[in-house]
Amino acid sequence: MEVIVLPTAADVARLAADVIERLLTTSPDPVLGLATGSTPEPLYQELIRRHREEGLSFAHARAFTLDEYVGLPAGHPERYAAVIRRGLTDHLDLKPEAVQGPDGSSADLLGECTRYEQSIVDAGGVDVQITGIGSDGHIAFNEPGSSLASITRLKTLNALTRADNSRFFSSAADVPRHVLTQGLGTILRSGHLLLLATGGSKADAAARAVEGPLTASCPASIVQLHPHATVLLDQAAGAALEHGEYYAEVWANRPVWQPL
Ligand code: GLP
Image 1 (cartoon, rainbow, N blue to C red):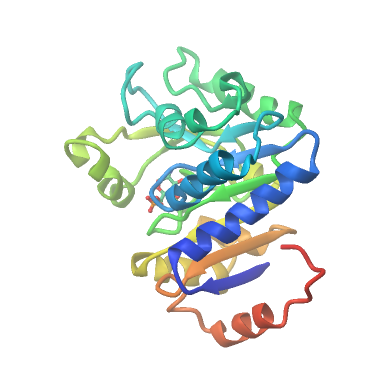
Image 2: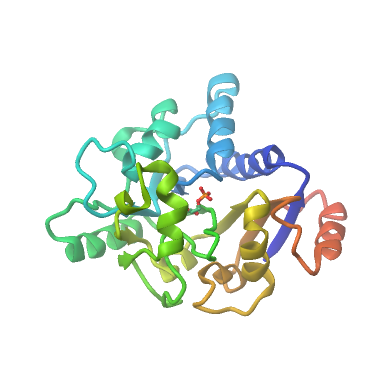
């Protein structure tokens, strides 16, 4: 695990974009893992900018999203499938059919979870998985208590997450109670896990994920178990870290030949 604390959220976005650019320019068949939420938005804007201004191409890439609300009607703007199209993939040369997500309006939700998990396996797995972190330490929609070995399944959101996400709906009561989400085991199988957190409201969750115990009570603590995890934080999100000075020293002395 590598923890990198950068001055601003824009620096986090640029470094995360460098990781994705490297994958896109070195792999003939790159598979991206995409997250929703506000945190990756500057990263997505940076990727769109590099596509438009620098010719960074996504035409050969495929992508899988982490999670989806259950029961939002077709055309609802807060379906994560719509959010990711609006915020990223519509603005790239990624083929629409190359972007997959779990279908939260399937008539067979349990079968849909099995199908989605298998589609990730069939694609050869995710190469770089972007994630944010919830203020309760959740990752994707794996709430505290999620099995560390879980795969894609139905979950019930807790009150804090529904309150946090109510800013996208008319009220907390309108936030769906159920979701489909990749499991912690699914995320652990990604080739490179890139966890992003920005802003002071994430400082406590980020410190628990990175320096607390590996525990289902803080699902994002799986960054400690992943064989190749990079945690990118801005100053505010890194403010509660105990070993911040050491992370800064590692970053300042990083060998130039060592990729993230
Ligand atoms: C939602 C998403 C998560 C995301 C979290 C934090 O619950 N399912 O993937 O990490 O929100 O969102 P934000 O980045 O907006 O704080």
